[in-house]
Image (cartoon, rainbow, N blue to C red; front, side, top):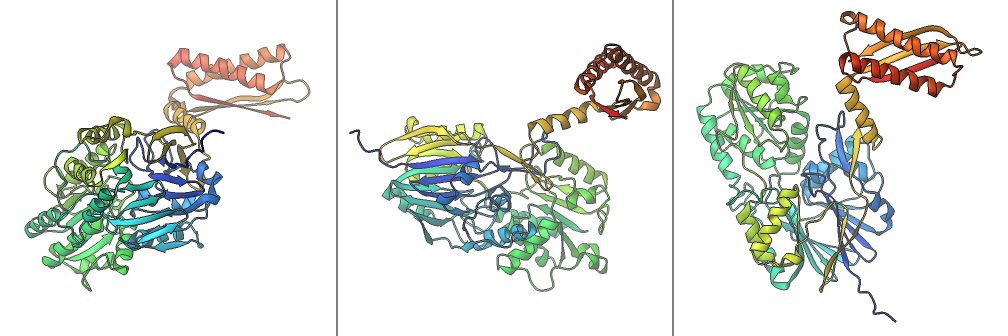
Amino acid sequence: MGKQQTPKVKIIPLGGLNEIGKNITVIEYKNDIIVVDCGIIFPEDEMLGIDVVIPDVTYLEKNKDKIRAIVLTHGHEDHIGALPYVLQKIDAPVYGTKLTLGLVENKLIDKGIKKSNLNVVKAGQKTKLGSMVVEYIRVNHSIPDAVALAIHTPEGAIVHTGDFKIDYTPINGKMMDLNRFADLGSRGVLALLADSTNVERPGSTMSEKTVGTAFNDIFMEAEGRVIVASFASNVHRIQQIVNAAVMFDRKIVVSGRSMINVVKVSTELGYLDIPEGTIIDINDMNKYPDNKLTIVTTGSQGEPMAALSRLANSDHRKMELIPGDLVIISATAIPGNEKTVSRLINQLFRKGANVIYEALSDVHVSGHACKEELKLIHSLVKPKYFIPVHGEYRHLKQHAQLAEDLGLDRDNIFILENGSVLELSRSEANINGSVPSGHIMVDGLGIGDVGNIVLRDRKHLSEDGLIVVVVTIRKEDGKVVSGPDLVSRGFVYVRESEDLMVEARNVVKNVLKDCEKNQITDWSTLKSRVRDSLRNYLYQKIKRNPMILPIIMEI
């Protein structure tokens, strides 16, 4: 008889590795699964027309009887955004802190999901889920109520930092619970999963308080309206804008759907402290002089539909940009958005506004830990195994190097791919195969129905346009009764290319004659011959390859 296999803990990231966003990780022991986070990622440039991208949760659907809970670290889109889609397939209880679940609840209502099992937890609490216990540990981040998780399994503790930074002077006075990390470290931690976003930056991330000081200085000098664009979820940042506005006796207008939403939820739940009468309705702005107004808005990433871009392009329904407005962009460009943000800044200057952005002043600090903070966490937690998470490949690689520099054995560091299955026990760790993972694209109400082939067609159409060839033929003898007619969209401007279109029509005519002579009436052959000859002709003539759609009708 062979020796009994000891059960192992499995760590399976389904998203969030080699990408920034779409965070979701499975922790599995025997018949119990705990899912950590459930986020979205915004589409890449080549994903034409896609709204958001959610993780592939085939593995969870197959094992839904084992899922004890989805546990959330904090309320950012890249950690909670996919819940409305995933909860339709998997009916699992969700655990998170008060603000996190407040934001989740709004998302679910938006998507028409009534029945949901949301459980509020506090930092310092523990939840028993099957054979595992999840403990919530307070951390600092750019949204309040963020927690790290210690997942206590029969093989040892797994610490997942979530997104974090170490802020010694946080806005709400609640510092990250470093004692608990040290305490866990002294008892022995099996594995650490840690945020890699800012691993390339030396030193430590500045405190959120430094932004407040910068705001006060800017507000003091400002003579007209002050417009501040920030991430809606950065409640501490909004609080500091409120503080500066109140200090200089300004009223606040909130603009942008997500901003209005977050301000409402955060105020109701007590995370934002806004004196009565400070916020006014956007329609009452003209009752106040410019130097008594502050506008808090979305659109710091240059998103075309967001309030700030609409202001810059003069198509905001309720507001106009006035020369002399001071615009503060209190955010940093998400990787890949640099061009859009720079275009927005140029446009704002063009409209006569003064713009202050990160390059000019301390109007933004990151919510993620830099090198020195990461070193501190590694040194406190002293894990046996380390898995860098939340970053592109270069971030994961650098974070692995940092752990090795601190003395962790290279064989105990695992840079995983989405879908990799890492099996851990007290004595060993191995990557053992993989499960399905990847992008599921959401376009309108369609989830996952737009795949690579549809995207390839969209790319083809967007680059080369379309020609439709319409022909009517008689059923009995296959003779052409009318046509061929050519319709062009996004290929050439027909009025200026009449000769080309006449010539193209003749090419199709000749093919049809040829087919008639050889008694070819099979539609698919007809179509492919029309398509091939027309493609060759157009390519020879003007070196373009439009999509060609032959339509044949019989009478």
